[in-house]
Amino acid sequence: MDQAEAMLLMQWMAEKGDPRSPTLGGLKPRQGATTAELADHRQYAALEERQTRELLQAYAGGVQQIPEIRARIEAAEQSGERTAIELDEARAALAQLEAMKGRLESEAPQLLPSDTTPPPAKQ
Image (cartoon, rainbow, N blue to C red; front, top):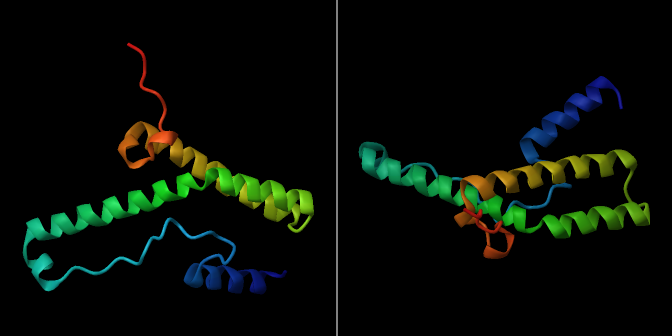
């Protein structure tokens, strides 16, 4: 693909997203603050906290899909249905998701299902 096609593709993906990407744990677009929330700093702080919690829960949902994503990558490799470049992209995205899982395990383990959290450190 030439530079103009690549730029069009990047613009389209920035606006619409990558159609190959799985959904992120049911994440929905954020709702803007109401007039009342904008007028009251406590209500606005509660809105921000709720939105942050929802985002983290969506990422935690994505972390739960790691085994399935890994299996889909392996199946695509075995079947030859994806190119080496596409498989490399998928593996890189999976590595980022696994790194995020590690951060969640150390920073917010309460967001992860109990079967994905590491055992407590021995004292």
